[in-house]
Image (tube, rainbow over all chains, first blue to last red):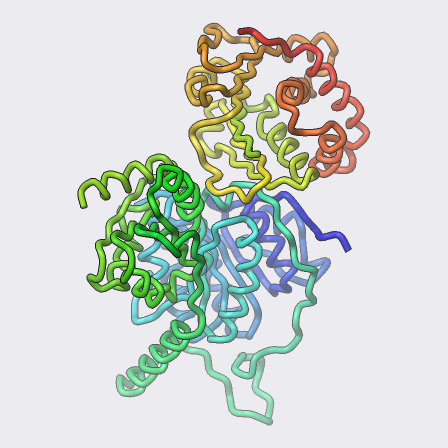
Length: 356
Length: 181
């Protein structure tokens, strides 16, 4: 059979992948540069084909609370937004994490702070990876670098979310959301009728009552719960860390970059190597869990690690923590919706090398 | 082979859809492709541009600032993109509304009076396909049958009856494109 190849925007790929994966519901509110997700789903009207519910809520806050409700019932539910909208969702997200519920949240990041710009940025890294809402919690954070991965990470995100009963986030940006590339789509899957044992589906006589809550007024019990969460995050770090390496074998210098920046750095690696500079790229695919151990190993043999991000320098802090002083770590970035060019990145690396 | 192209003009000239058809044609030829549009207020201000990359290899950065080919359809875009053509590269432009013609000596400049031709042929809607024909003549990357396949993929089925008209426009574009320098 011929592969089903389509040319799609990243945003459209997410929407189509959600239908094909067998998601039960999407709740969203429009905001540039991710509105195509909602638009595509509305037009596809999957309720008629797979039974998936698509709803434009009255606000971002309403949308995330619909996700909370759907997730509590054991359904595969998702939402998407861009930076300012994701800030609005943070209360709901921490409740979902606190109630140990699986769901998928997509952030197609734009420049900030505040309303910022509508152009691509990576300045929501701290918010995505370090918490965002209050309390000790983590999301599982996936960073796609192509339209193909936008599609693939919908399924991966849901699978991980259900495996660990934890919200997962796809942290993308306006460039990958808006660009079109070839994408190979998975076949349509039926929506699953099986619900997890913890879902609140009405109490039968055969089991105890299922309770979904993020509240425990007894601090002893809450601390035990916090410890359980931490254990879960350690397990995720142990088993689910994903990354990709590009020409790191003989590298003296390494770029660390995710998403759009990783694509730019891949070109920068080619350009620098044409000039005889041995540079490689480590691309974290999961931002939480972060590929700490691999970076620490690479730190033994490279002179400089340069984090390249479309931010003032956020992921660079995790690179520093990973290498723990073993090698020099620096940062290059553009902000506010500006995108660095491969030449610019190489030029900056050369300046750093000169200063060594 | 990697061809990095910018197409720039007014919103409504079919800049984005021309890019999309090129990208789809590339897919039909088993190439790697990327299509990166300008979006948001830039577009609402009246200008639209799209970066299309066609390559035999996996495409690294979809965002670049130097191009092998620039296809320029208004004066603002000429001001913005003439300098972004790599030395030895190609600039194709429609002279309609152009007040300052391109001057660089280190690139090959082609002119295509597509707007005029489209109105002569009473086919204003396929203006962008005339331009595409010009590009296909100057750079033999995209094959006609693949472009037709690309059109079929990117146009909704109810418009498939318009494909012969598009084909005719492409052929006309191939005939009227002319080298300037």
